[in-house]
Length: 93
Image (cartoon, rainbow, N blue to C red; front, side, top):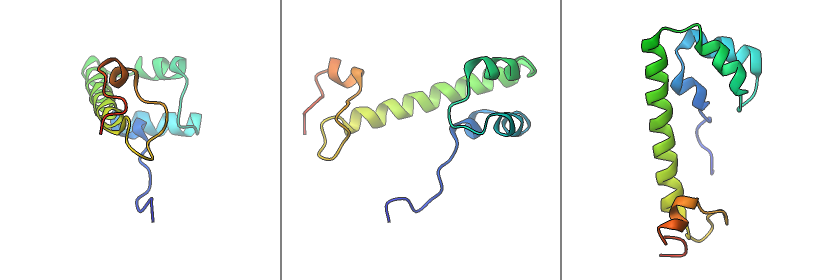
């Protein structure tokens, strides 16, 4: 089976539980609108916002590393990351 585990909503990894529950009830989508996120973030403390930003950057870095690693592999999506293409990694095995 390709997917043994349930997918994790990336928003759940970044936001405190109280904010995530509020947003998920409101949005019911995997890609909330930035304006709604901005409004929700406005109700958090500066420390909570900093924590979310650090988590978001960490997830972004990890996802870019996966894209770079997959660039040019058999069965990988045709669309390689721009970063991998710039570095000349596309098509390397």
